Length: 88
Image (tube, rainbow, N blue to C red; front, side):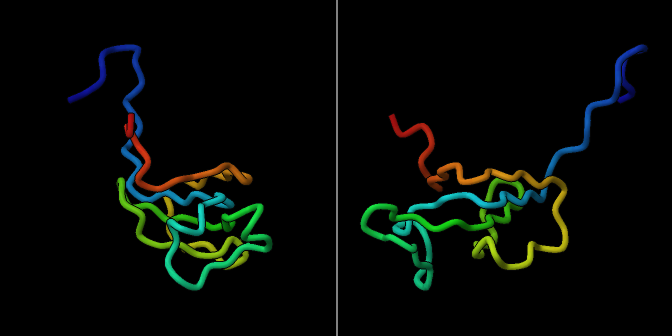
């Protein structure tokens, strides 16, 4: 359907997204990830590649990002807790 006169067409849906520099608790990450101070700061800084609403890869932030992403968001150390949604 065409947009009404004077209105812009909606943007295409985002299917591939890269979340850069997210802090994720070590307990939520696969084996092999580590933290500089696991007692006082038990998280690692990682890049999360998403496809629609699923995490498809997790990599240390120092590694090269995936080649294709519709949108990249730099979280700059924001805490991300996968699976913690509407838990109240």
